[in-house]
Length: 153
Image (cartoon, rainbow, N blue to C red; front, side, top):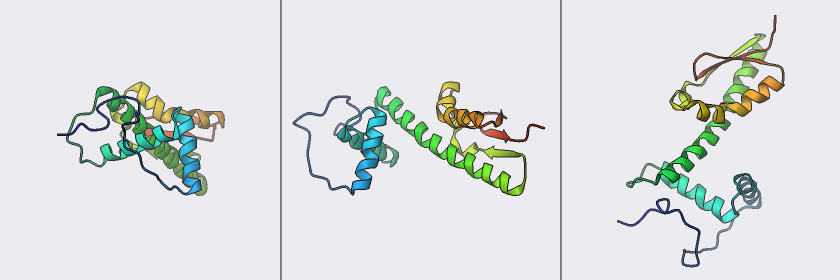
């Protein structure tokens, strides 16, 4: 059985396979920004994304290292944070359009109930801080139900 790429944490070397890759300019810019945010080179960002995609494909038959599992879980939380934000904005818009003063956001399918408190904050903290800075009051009913209150009466 060959060793999977994520089981050994090491720097890329001259012995690693190389090939040319054509990317549309806008995709390259997007990946370059992501690489800067992740404090990685463009190459390292592309490799990390390919490893993550391969692992998420469900065809993995080996156990990743604990370090790699933590990295992959952190990447998943970042994706979940984007989905949480979309859901929050969607439900807020619906509540506003209905003339309501509270938006109820059901996040049960996001896996938040399986996260530790710190992981939950890592996933939801940014949108919550943004809402609070905009003057909303937030009320969590468990780890996966958020009420956004915008009428203080």
